[in-house]
Length: 280
Image 1 (cartoon, rainbow, N blue to C red):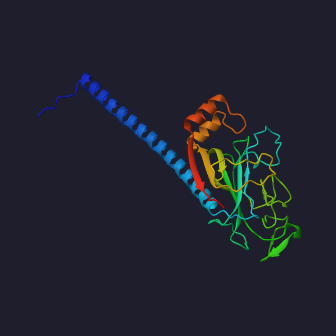
Image 2: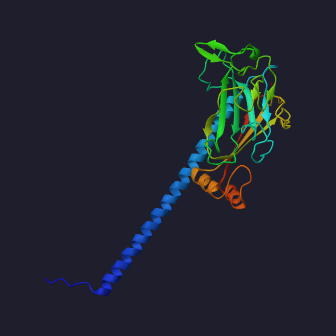
Image 3: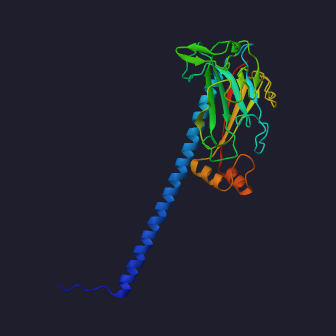
């Protein structure tokens, strides 16, 4: 039996139908890939926020209180342009510091279960810095040593060389110092800051007393705060892809462009946790 050959018209129509089907499949594939990437970014943001909020809540709920244990809520003093007018980049944003029997202690020798715990979002005008956009956590074991005693050798390690953190009989705080304050906003009172979660655009705290009145924040970097009954934590963050786009169009910590501001507001996600500490 003789096979009838395809005509040019039939071949053209077949190729056109094939191209339509391929274009439809490619469009479906690209849409599916975009949905998957968006979902993955959202999942990453939610997971990062959950990790940070859970850890902060646990540390706050284990916060230690007596007349010798300061609680410090440093308010955001503003974002001065370079050169920085404040002594450290950890001072530029809100900071929370307190004594806690944290479930994640430091890896140093401690003489008690209590630690100095500090949280802050790193401030910078150079968004390519390794710490840019990170929430940082510092946790330091209580050496229970008088800062005036100077360096002490313990297990062949030198500790407290500059009066490293000791809240016993020490009720002072400062932005930066030689280690004589219970808390400082830089590393002089405690261990080096460590990264917690990335791509954060803002971290704020609100502290309330038992009557739900918001407590006064320290704006000078010298005042111990009243121990709160409630602490509200607010984290704003972008997923990795959105963060990279935001930085590329001028997003930064000292005066982002209008386009970057609109993009950030449209894409950042806000997560809030209220932690009850009780009336102490």
